[in-house]
Amino acid sequence: MMRYLPHGPEDRRAMLEALGLERPEDLLATIPEALRLRSALDLPPALSEAELQEHLSALAMRNASTGCYRSFLGAGAYDHFVPSAVDHLISRTEFYSSYTPYQPEISQGTLQTIFEFQSMICMLTELDVANASLYDGATATVEALLMAQRAHGRDRVAMAATLHPEYLETARTYFRNLGLAIDVVPHAADGRVDEKALAAAVGSRTAGVAVQSPNVFGVIERLDRVAEAAHGAGAAAVAVVAEPYSLGILRGPGGLGCDVCVGEAQGFGNPLSFGGPYLGFMAAREKYVRQMPGRIVGETTDAEGRRGFVLTLSTREQHIRRAKATSNICTNQGLCMTAATIHLSLLGREGLREVARANAAKASYAISRLTSVRGVRRAFSGPVFNEFALELPGPASDALEALRARGILGGVGLARWFPEAERRILVAVTERTRREDVDAYAAALEEVLR
Image (cartoon, rainbow, N blue to C red; front, side, top):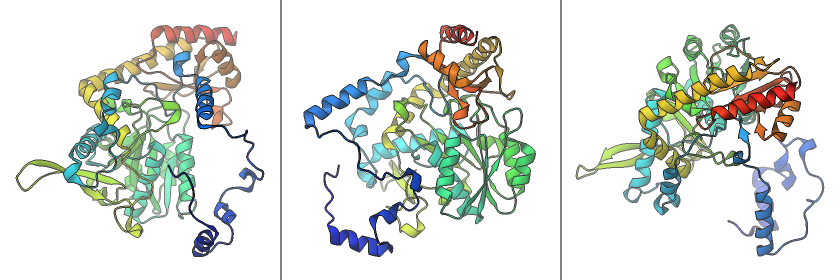
């Protein structure tokens, strides 16, 4: 941690001149005026280090974890079971303290772990190459579309309105100053992207088409048709996966014709952790390999014929000239990636499929029980994996608050992102959800809506 800033007035003045700016405030020009703080921070008097630690501990104790509630939250962050072996193994110092494997001769363990992670992602997505991961699903989505822009030299992308809204907002933030326009494609009545609107939105200027499956409503998209529409216009088909366990029973996007698959791997070995750190992933067809961001680890042999691992491609700006870098934010997310690799190794192919089937079965039971409550129905008819949208007879916010008072986190109110959906909630279940949890939810919901 940097404990002080060594730059004096002359240093700051020189930096501003180099940037063509007059005041430090000019650095904040892109932040809307209404969001800027114009007064001093309202902070209490300073505390000693010991007092500060006690104060922060007291604040932390006020956090309510999912263990305090029956939780049905999802929307991109899922409460999956993490075996204790995962935490035990990543706590070993050779994993816990390792960073970027710049020197392969002393980083074989780290490089092999990344290689194994890449191999597993390729198997899950049915694509040719994977990189050494990204920060999270949102930035991975952006990186995929920027990769499509570089590969196809076009200035527009099409993104389904059924993408997680925060993924969409991240893309808007990135593309705002890059000259890349976004065409948002609406959804149909079944909760899937509107295929006619998609065909109309994709044209000769479209670099890539991004569709999430299962999408933000939990509905499974027809990625084969999305790929067909993208390829018809010469664009890249980008599949986004926010719930990685779905790949345990759904066909890999590559097998459905998609060129790139990105998403969020938090569900593999990484706890919810109040929102992070999480783990992005990316896989693509081999023709995109030199446009992929970050690092790709490859397998080779040394001069004596022994198996070894090296950074085959490293296109982050700290490795090559900045003008040729494919990304300035990507990272190998080493510890999170290691946790995911260990977790997948423990599960194995059959274990992953078994857990995925349990998720789907529990969702089916939850839909049956919750829609048996008077006035509650499914918001969309499309097929789902472990998450689904419900429509209530009244405001969702009132029902969710009443459920919370009864010890149940009943889901996410969709009005948070879709103002017109004030009566809709997004409900998620995982292998950790018990039948009695669902029964308790249904009974409480019936009482709340009475």
